[in-house]
Image (spheres, rainbow, N blue to C red):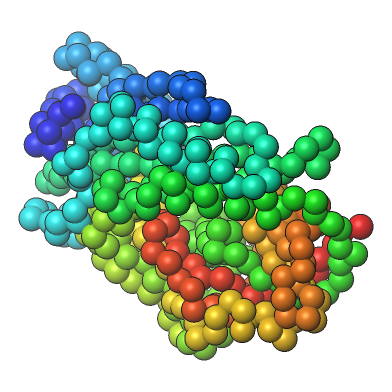
Length: 448
């Protein structure tokens, strides 16, 4: 795999080719990755995967017209053709008054902060196999587990580079390590399945494989013999496994594309009190070893920590350069680039601050409610905020968990849900979106 400097040179070279071919401006994103994964099932080796990829994407501007194109063929002749085709495509595209590179005066430059995203340790295939087996053995050792979907362990490395025609060039690399296990419990029509999974940049930040496997087994057995619930208006508790989805809906609603298209349920809510006073949602793209940490965004702008919700109030939008121009504002360093196309919006490492109550205290006064561990389906209207999703989890009776339940829905409106959200004190720091257990009052639960 190319070093970061070599990746930068590759992106710069394509930008220069585009300028020579007639582009008024251009940027290029280079990405490379390699990964190895081992999967076992019922104690036997089931699959060994090794993948390597390289891709480069070019975006060109001819006046206010633009086009994007990508290729995995990085030979000189292929890149020459890529640049020429991109110019032809741009000349045929409609004009866009907001298209263009990020403002030059806002570009960031090296040196960037050390985010410690690379692990020098590269596990052998045998070590990955042993971790996968350890995870599955621990899961299958839990009483009530009757079968396995398998366990896996993987490790990988990736490099991203961005170069623009107006002076930005940067690259960074990262590594990834993960362990997962999925098992089945019960017999016949009463079977249930659950899993556990962890990922980190550094292998040392992962818990022991046996701990991950045991968690998968315990979660599976806890779901056995689920009952049904009649439903009604009641409090809903979201387990941390699913509580982060509430913040994900917030992020989608405050992205520049949603605001400029006027397709967000938060369109007129800038500065409004969305959550209870004291609640904070914080974005930190510079957290050391954070899963979504990055030193610069997809347009070459600096990334920085920021409160998205401060004391319960919405502080602003997440903008790339195009949406910022349309709104008469400044880009916020949240642009993201994929394999091609114009930038989208992405956040760094998010968390909601912990509250003061334990999860047990949070549900202590609930006479009849539900504790949700899994959400199913995509029943969220991004324009109105109406929310309805299938769920499974546990019933809450007189302040305590009272057995598993399944096949019910939880419904409400996200604006009302935000206002009725209370966080517990059990915030953990290993996901890309870290949210404690949440209580949301006044939701509608439908079951039988």
